[in-house]
Amino acid sequence: MVFETYSLKNGIRIVHGRNTSPVAYCSITINAGTRDELDKEHGIAHFIEHVIFKGTKRRKAYHITSRLEDVGGELNAYTTKEETVVHAMFLKEDFHRAVELLYDIVFRSTFPEKELAKEKDVILDEINSYKDSPAELIFDDFEELLYPHHPFGRNILGTKRYIKGFTKDDIDTFIKRNYNTDQIVFCSIGDIPFKRVIRLAQRYFGLVSANLRTQVRTPIIPAAPKYEEVKKSTYQKHCMIGSRTYDLKDDNRIGMFLLTNILGGPGQNSRLNLALRERNGLAYNVEASYSPYSDTGVFSVYFGTDKANFERALNLVYAEMKNLSDKRLGVLQLAKAKKQLIGQLAIAAENSEALMLNAARTFMFYNSIDSLSEINARIEAISSDYLLHIANEILDEKNLSTLIYK
Image (cartoon, rainbow, N blue to C red; front, top):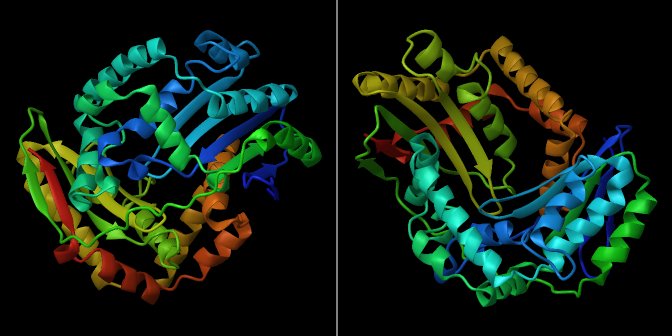
C-alpha cells in the first residue's frame, strides 16, 4: 500500500493509505505515554485514555459511544509506554463522522468530575483483574526489573493510590505538557480520496493551536542485569528472561526481529516451542518478543510450567539461546527463517487496522513509511554471520535478567 502524507501548519501530520474496501479506519496517535509521567502522575496517561470518552463540549458519554456504534462502527483506544492512541473502524461513507468524533474527544474533552469518579472505580477493578493474571502481570514486573527507578519501568495502569487522587487539573496539566501538535499523527486507511482526507483534517485538526514539544524525556540510565524470585500463590511457575536491546534508531533492529522470530516467534516451529512444548510437553505457552522504543528496546522470553518441570524447562531455554549464539545458521535454515518472517509480515499487512496503527507509529518516529518490498530487502540482506553477532551480543546469559514467579 502506498501512503500519502501532509503536514498541517500547527505540526499535526496526516497519513493516508487508499484501498478498495467498504470499511475504513482512522486513528490519532500521540507521542505520549507512561514514560512521560512525573512520579506523582503514575497511571495518568492510561487514565486519560479512559476518560476522554466521558464527555466533550458537545457530547455526553453516551453520545460519544453511540456516534459510531449507531452506524455499525467501533471506537477504541490504548496506551503504551510511549504512545496514546484513539482509533475507529467504520463504513467508508461515515468517514466524516469518524474524523469529527476523534477531533471532539481528543481535543475537546471536558472530563466531568462525576465521570472521573466512576472511571477511577473501573480502573481500580482493572488493576485487580490484572493481579489475577500472572502471565500478564509478569511482563510489567519484568520491565520494572530492567528499568529500576525510571518512568519507563512503571506499569501502565498505575497504582490505586495515585489513581484515586487524580483531578481534572492533573489531567489538563499532563495534556498541555505532552499532547504536542508536532507529536501527533492522524492516520487513515480506506477508499477515500486523499484530497478529502486533507480537507477534513484541515477543517477539524487545523483548529488546534500549535503546541510544539520543548521538553526532553528522562534518559535511560544504565542498570546491571538482575535475578529476582517473587512468591506467588499460583499452580505454575512463571518466568521472564531478557534484557534491554536495540532501539528504533538502531540498524540491528531488523536482525533482532529475525532472531527473536527464530527463537520464539508465533510459529509452532520456533525453537523454544519445539524444545519445550512439542518435544517435551513442558509448557503450554512459551514465546520470545522484541519491542523497540525511541531510545531503548526490550527483549524477553516468557514461559509458564508446572513447578516440578521448571528447572528442566529453564535449562532448555538457555540451551536454545546458547545454540543460536554458538552455531551459525546454515544456508537453508537462514533462507527458511527469512521466508517465514517475510510471509508473516505480508499476512499481517492484510489486517488494515493493524497496518494503520503500525504506519502511524512508524511515521511518528521516522517521518516516512517503508514499503513491504523495502522491508523484505532488508531481511534478505541479513547474513548468518550478522545474526550470530547479534545472538552473541543479546543472548549471552551473563547479560540477561531473570524474573520468576514461584
